Image (cartoon, rainbow, N blue to C red; front, side, top):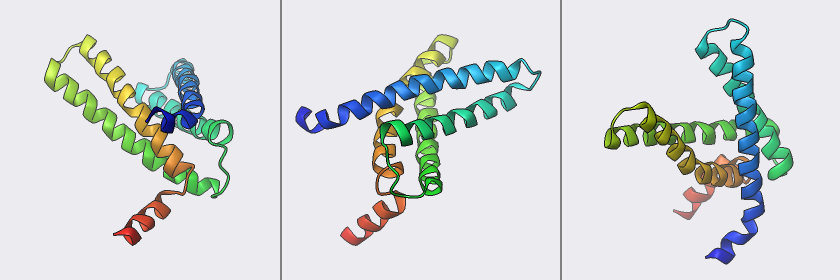
Length: 146
């Protein structure tokens, strides 16, 4: 099994490095926007949009290097994968708090667990769907196989 995963390791490590860089961009832009007397939720929304676009472009051009489909289609698929990961993250946080109780420490631990769960999900989703054949092609292929 390790031999099957070995070819994907460099791309996975780049994915993690890009994610770390995007976290810095997200947090930094959030802090900078807050300094302009904007509400918290607006600052969070703007910084998240900046993070999404940065993450997409860095993965497209530096990691997966895929230009087979139009960028608009890839970005639409990217958003589907990202929203799926958002749902998984919220579910993991809710589950963690339900099991271990609500506290600030548990909330931070839950968020870390959610990120850990979402890293491989996001990587596979973006590799196979966003920068792979695309969501539509995968659905059609599954329907034909059934």
